[in-house]
Structure formats: structure tokens, C-alpha cells
Amino acid sequence: MRMPNSNSRSSAEKKVDQSVGYQEVHRRVLRKGSELDDAKAEMGEVREENARLKMTLNHIQKDYQSLQLRFFDILRQEASKNAVNVAGDRIIEEPEQLLSLCLGRSPREPTSDRETTTSSNFTKLVQVDDGEDNLKANLTLGLGSNETSLEEPNKDRAEAGSGDATSPLSKTPKTMRNEDGEPPTQVNAKRARVSVRTRCDTPTMNDGCQWRKYGQKISKGNPCPRAYYRCTVAPACPVRKQVQRCYEDMSILITTYEGTHNHPLPFTATYLASTTSAAASMLLSGSCTSHPGFSTTSTLLNGSEFSAFDNTRTQLYMPKSSQPLLPTITLDLTASPPSSSTFPSSLSFCSPSDSNIFPTSWDNGYLKHGLHQFDKAQVGSFNLGKPSQEYFHQNYAEIIHQASSQVSLTESLTKAITSNPNFKSVIALALSSMVGSGGGATHRNQGESGERINT
DNA sequence: CGTTTTTGACCCGCGC
DNA sequence: GCGCGGGTCAAAAACG
Image 1 (cartoon, chains in turn purple, red, brown):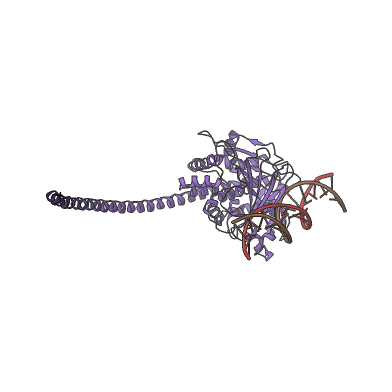
Image 2 (image 1 turned 180 degrees about the vertical axis):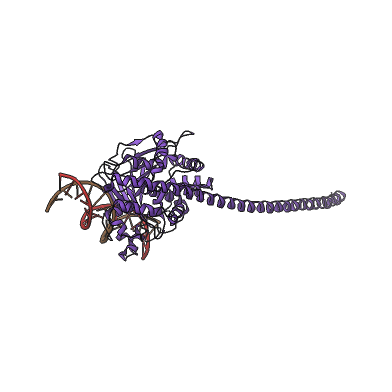
């Protein structure tokens, strides 16, 4: 039995329903469309505002950097003036102990100036280092791709007349060979190294660079093999690193970097490289002892430089008498996370052999004291301004804290850096400011003079 | 097949 | 001069 009415009614109802449905959908579409337009307009506004903020931020950063550069420039000039006076005094006291530490200095500096380490040469070179160009150059240390390097043995050798710039590795002194007529002390200086101690479970620390293993040795006193790597980012890159586990604590990885990258560095590698290079440059810019009867004052100068780090444990390691002087600066990232006010890492100046630790060490108080007592005696170095100290300390502490709890130092660095966009400029300026005249090691600053450092 | 790693040999400086 | 130890070379093996 059929129900036409019901059918027709239902059809009409369907039409009505459809009509209503279309209208509703149409209304919804219109509503959505208007919302979409609103959202688009809003996004456009946000984008514009974002662009404006970016521009403003860039301006602020540029202004900030330029102001800091000027500020450090002024401070450096004052410190250098003081350094010349004090250096002159020290020459009178112990001229025979002078040692050239011209790490990565300009290859065009006159070799004759390095042939002897007389007091007159020392005075002369220090004065040259006070030159304005040098100061400016030093202030740009560290964060450029090619400027993040410790030294430039490759270029040095190429321009020193070896005539074989394409095979720098073959020219790299195996130990302390005296090549190109350079005095041994110069070779020593070029081989300054930066050692990074960090807790790491992986065989090597991920520092952002590409490395190729070229050797492995079991060194005396440590059953853990020492691996030798060279940088493969660029074919002729002379940078090498040694990786060895700490015998006392197998979780600690000791990575020692040596040399200069002659190529742009990956972003994640830049910061570590700049830090280590600056540290090495700082080490070499400051005075360093070359024999057991070292001058306490001169070593404390280095400590004073890093007294910007409150609570930093700084130790001096003396070179083994049997080993050549290879100044090494150690960045210890293995300390446990700090309390809110402490800075856990330690920074050490040491000999190539950690087994022969010189007993001299000083605590924070000594360092702080040294900051005031010795900063005027520092050759080509000076102390950070307080705002920079705090800023640098804050950011560096953040890195140290993360590095102590994570496998990858690079990740830690990247994290800290990305969370604070100003870190790059600040750490560069802070470190370069501490580097002193030796900071020129990271530059291709032509005509830069070598630096004679009282040892 | 090109690149990287392994590993024994070799080089060099230094102390005895 | 010899031995030791650190560092590098280079051929072979391993790897992707």
C-alpha cells in the first residue's frame, strides 16, 4: 500500500531541508570565508610586525656590537699601554727567559724579529702589538668561519717560503721540527692546543666538524688508546684533534684540538671552535712559563684573564722538562651542574702531559685578587667590563651546565646559542677581549707583529 | 668504487 | 749511540 502523501510530503520536506541546508552551508562558508580573511589579515599584520621587530633587533644588535667593540678597543688600548710598561720591567728582571709565543701570528712578520729573544726585541714587539690595527683585528676574533681558528700553521708555512701550500699536512711538524728557518720557540707557539674535557658516551665528541681518523696509539700511563683525527671538511685543513678517554674516569672524553681551520665551519662547530681558539689565543697572548722556575706572576696573569668566571677553578700545569713546550689550555666541561651562583667548569693551562701536574693552583679568591693585582701587568690583555662578564658568565655557564648532562657538546652549544641570539656576539667579544695581543692568531692580519712573552 | 678505519712501521726528539 | 715515547704515514681491510 502506497502512501503518496507521505512520499510527496517527504520530498517537499527534503527540498525544504536541502534548501535550508544549502543556506546554512552557504552561511557557514561565508562565515568561514570572513574568518579566513580576518585570519589572513591578522597574519599579514603579524608578519609585518615580525619584520619590523627583526629589523629593530638587527639594529639593536649592530649598535650593541659596535658599542662593545669601541668599548673593548678603548680598554684594550689602556691595558696595552700598561702592559708595555710592566713588560719592560720584567725584561730587566729575567731577560734570558723570554720566549716567543707567536702562535699563528702573521706569517709576514719579519723572521729576524723572531730569531733572537733579547730584551730589546721583546720591548720592540710588544710595542708593535700595541698598534691600533692589531687591536682592531683582535677584536674581530673568533666567530668568522675562518677566524675561529687557533692558528695558521698552514698559511704560515706556505708564505714562509716552503712553496708547498697544497700539501700542508706534509709540512706540519711531526713534533717540534724546526722548519722554514723558524726558531724552535716559534714552532712551539704554533702548536698551542686546546683540550676539552667533557663527559661523553660516544667514541668522539660531536663538535660539528668532519674528522678522519689517521692513527691510534696507546700512550704511556693510560691504557685507553689515543685516537688521532684530522679535519676533512676541507682537503687541506691542517686542524687535528686527539681523542682519549680519561683513565680515572672513563666517562670523560679528552679532546685536544690543534691547528687552524682554513674553511668555513658548520654552524654547530663555530662556537666550540671560537671558544677553543680564543682560549688558545688567550693562553698564548698571556705569559707562560717555559721552565720549572716559572714566574708566578706571569702565570697568574692568565688566571686574571679568566677571573671573569666566578668560581672558576684554574690550574696551571707545567710542562714536563723532558717535553717541548706545547702550551695547552684545558676547558673542563665535566663538572657537575652548578648551583645557582657557581660556575662549575675549570680552565687550565697545562703542559702536553697531564700526568705531570704542577701543584700550583688557586681558588676563586686568588683569582679575583689576581684580577685586580695583575691585570695591569698582562701583556696585551685586559679584563671584561662587568656587564660583559656577567653576560658571558651567564651564557657560558648555561653551556657548561648542559654539556655536563648531555652527550653531545654541540647540541648543548647549539641549544644555548639558539636560546640566546646574542650569545654569539657576546662570547666573541668577551673572548676576544680576553685574548689580548695574541688574539691576532686567529686573523690573517697582515703585517702583524709577533709577540715576545716573558717566560 | 670511493671513503674511512685499522694497524704496523717509521720518524723524530729527548734522556740516559 | 741506544732506547723510549709521541706522533704520523701508508697499505690493507672494512664499510656504505
